[in-house]
Image (cartoon, rainbow, N blue to C red; front, side, top):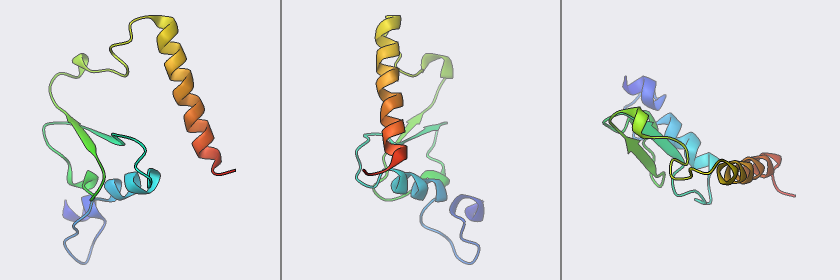
Length: 94
């Protein structure tokens, strides 16, 4: 499992491969939480210095995306803003 989580076949790795990907995705640390782990522990694949990970345990029915926004129009407006932000970031600088 160490190899699977760290992608280090020759030694015991200290960072998870997915944590490293998350750090590269948000190098300026603009997001409070870049990664969410569903389970009762932090999976080793997600471990990387400087990468915040939210761990969610318990029944998943209690959790959702933007669960406090009940009004449909407001939810659509927030989701549209997020979508535009993702599009802008994927185009890169310029």
